[in-house]
Image (cartoon, rainbow, N blue to C red):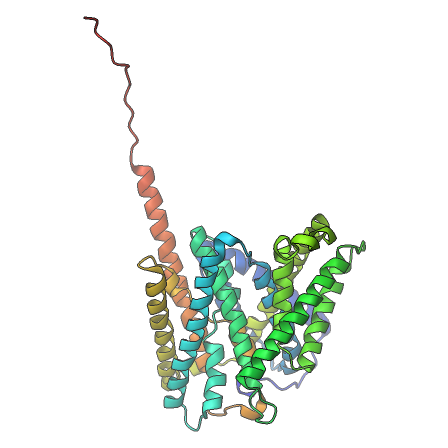
Amino acid sequence: MNNLIFLESSAIIDPYYLIIGASVIVILSFFFNMLSKLTNIPSVLMLIVLGVILKVGLDAKGITMNFRPYLEILGIVGLIMIVLEAALELKLERNKLMPILIAFVIALVGLLASTFVAVLILKQFIPDITDQQAWLYATPLSILSSAIIIPSVSALRKDKKEFHIYESTFSDILGIMMFYFLTGNIDPEAGQSIIGFSGNIVLTIVISLVASYVIVLIFQNIKSHVKLFLLIAILLLLYAIGKKMHLSSLIIILIFGLLIANMELFFGGRLRKYLNLKKAQHIYEELHIITLETAFIVRTFFFVIFGVTISLVTLLDIDVAIVSMLIIASIYLIRFIMLRITMGTDIMPQIYIAPRGLITILLFYAIPESVELKTFNPGILLFVIIGTSLIMTGAMILEKKRSGSAISKAKSIAVGSVKWKAPSIDSE
């Protein structure tokens, strides 16, 4: 996206310096993750700060770089890995059907309501913005970041942790589908009606199921030790072909992830005899590791690049602050209403766990040039991401203190004991 201040290339950097720099960034990102677990400060914020520091260093050396050629490919791979990672986390168990359904409804209603309110705010404060542009710019700002949430909620109570995993996963997938539905309607002749879009989804689901079954059945019989990157290559190929056929390609990735994460459910009845569960489970475990590692790399470089390309001066703009704070306030007001209705009073710290992150950035980069808004200040994006991340950080720190205080209080209560003596029976 042009508004995000991409740098023009004016110098050739020694490739060894690039390797050193990339390696140091990955190492620092690893330690940021460890520090995040200790402090509850999202590693995202640390990576953005690292990007800002890197930008200062590059400016001091007079070095400029153009990141745009790499971002589109990195963004596509990032979307695929994030959706696959999220799908592999979803266990479709019967006793979890209701929590999954509640999380889905909250994610869907939250996405639609937050987007609608953000549209109203953008139209009020940004001149010359059309309805179509407002919806395109508001949608990324309304999507939860599973890339931030899932690692951050590991210390929460089990049911709350699972809720956040389900909700953020659904928010990512639904938000991405909604965004690409909106971009598909930019050209009136190429646009899709709701009926056409629904038919597209049904066709994509059918193709996805067939392809997923075939992939699992074939790959469980491959004896080579290097088959996992072959599997990822096939998924990338299916995604790209689906895009060219105007299918909802991310559904292909989602269905495959769900199927391989829940093989006993999908391979029921007569299909069970075709499944070698032990071998297929081994594929799932290794794929899960590779997906986590790849998503980690994508997240690392995206947030660092984001820090490099965004000017912090925009945060001092009063209009940026007003628009951003209104959007953030609407996010938590809508969230409070939904959680209060569905969960009652036990909504802490869930109400404050609503950060925006990688998906938001990726979709901003994906806004078509034909509808880019020159008057949109990218500082709004930075403000909302940092603001929601800081709010979540504060809530998680308070929750940790509250839980620690409750545990300490329970341990401080002395447990007494008395000697028990059997009652005697007096003889008459």
